[in-house]
Image (cartoon, rainbow, N blue to C red; front, side, top):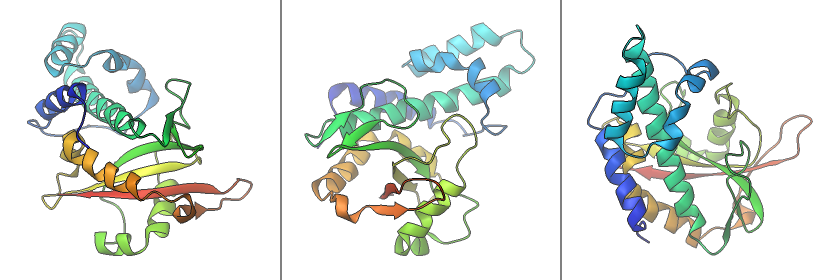
Length: 214
């Protein structure tokens, strides 16, 4: 399955971001999220840069805010495109409430949030070990997630990105490739094979990992 024409356009825009260094300068936080809320409404990378320059040209933190904004823009629009790829399958139903923290879509009536995750720098295990122990990796990802807006203990599908060059983040722009990986996963999706995680005072979490390697 190849992306729809609009996803091809988004892929082209995302790849413009990959030509520059990926620098956050700070951990993601609610204050800077509010400052850069405009990233949701701008799809073109060049327009994004112009907006940042115009809005923050007198701000001494322009570079810091700019780095933060382009990274949020890149991650958000990649995530939305990946959600559309999932929702193109007949067994997937998009969640009715937009921008919900805990659910993006249903697969066979099971609600899932999805998260595209680069292979973590601070993880204590190798990629090989992680692939051999998916349940332990999934538990680690839940335990070590951000404490900001999207922190939750609900069902989640992780799309794990791993690049031999260590530029894992650049794979978020490879929508055509990721579409094929997701297609392979959905072709063999079996609710009975989902990873189950139990937390005290919580219902059982259902989760799974999809690996995308390049």
